[in-house]
Image (cartoon, rainbow, N blue to C red):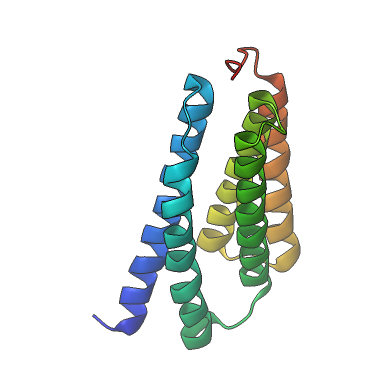
Length: 151
């Protein structure tokens, strides 16, 4: 066991926590219950658990490859979209349906990043994976027949 192994473990735990938070958000949107408070606490923890060890893994191992840059950029976009969606939903600026579509897009992007982190493709393939994930998420969100409960 070395520092690289520990950093990789924390990085993966951070990614798992991100998916747990996305799951909680999705369930709360369907059930019509607020989950913003939990996401405001655990979201930054997940972000730091992904970012800090991820930067170490890049510095100690792989270096800045295309898939790393795509993963980092996607992580920023997911974090910003999560914050904007959560705040907008709490302030009544977006509907639960719009928030659910945002959620599906972010889930798709996150799955694209998992593909990138696993396969480690060239930059263009990494970009396509995240874009396809986001597009599939958007399509699924728009096509969902079951209405999200109103506030």
